[in-house]
Image 1: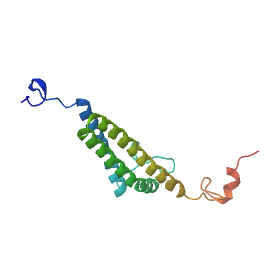
Image 2: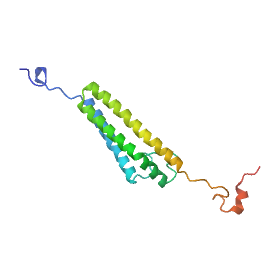
Image 3: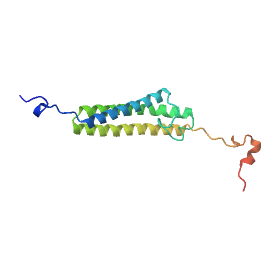
Image 4: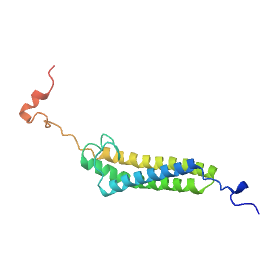
Length: 151
């Protein structure tokens, strides 16, 4: 009877790069999931790094919260896909694991991108109407002529 683990009795080491890929996918899944949960609960405030960041969504705090609430389900879906990719990289054979990682990462990016695109359209659609007339730049309608450029 041959020794366990292969010739010479040595157990085959698990490829370290697969473990690194799995850990990276799990960390990304947790990060994207945390942003998704914060956005869904309304606790994601305007910032430089996380959430849907367009000119319309950054207009004010209300627009940012609404935009990211719309995008939150797709962010959570992307987090689940990334976690599935991490599990697949650990459990499938090398070729199957590589294919699964590539497919799940692309699917996660497309899912998050689609949700962000829809959320950006919502932010653009909720843009406040610009007022005609005096506006607020001069302070009063009697000063309207002062605001207009002279020829």
